[in-house]
Figure 1 (cartoon, rainbow, N blue to C red):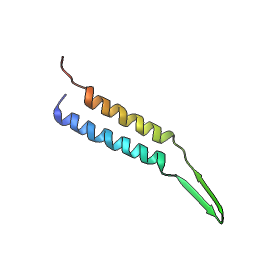
Figure 2: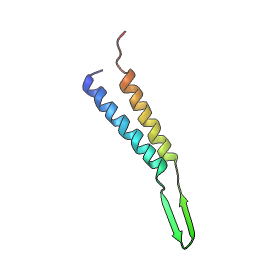
Figure 3: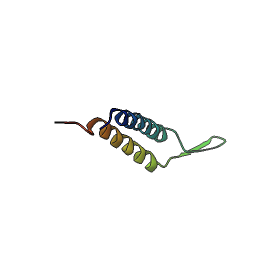
Figure 4: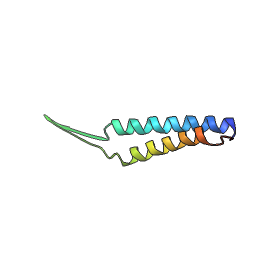
Length: 67
């Protein structure tokens, strides 16, 4: 695999992984009424993004190795 393509995949993988972790940690919706605070999260998209980031990182490291 070309060195440039490997570098691009590495950068995209790190970006997807970081964004997925951010989506996992940051609350989606917050409602505050007086003393009542409600936060909801839907983590399905975060898990998919983290998985894609890990897959891209694996492809960048393993892809194109010559024996």
